[in-house]
Amino acid sequence: MHSLDFRRTTKNAIIMALTIAAALIWKDAISDALQLLVPAADRLTYKFGTAIIATIIITVLIYLVLETDHEAEYAYHVLFDRRGSIRRK
Image (cartoon, rainbow, N blue to C red; front, side):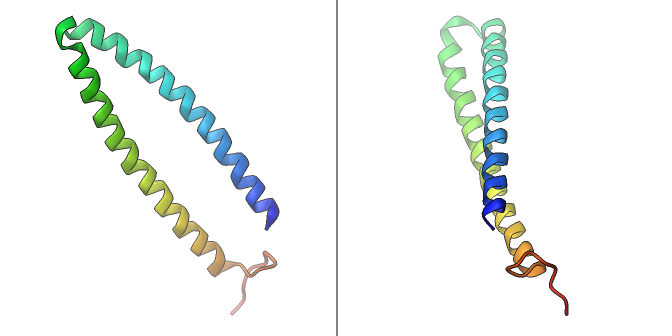
């Protein structure tokens, strides 16, 4: 079971690093697009709007990921016993 926890932790760390890299790239792209498309006086309002929308979307996605993780954990326990071998009926 410890190796499963290590693999999960390693996988989560890699996914988090890639997510942060993608988020920084998108931040630059959105910022550049706002500079081109939005007048300087309204730029701050659009930045807050974008931040609020992104926060809502990310919150929903995190909820979905956590829910599917619980379902996967349940399926794992249903299929395998404590030794990691497949349960037989």
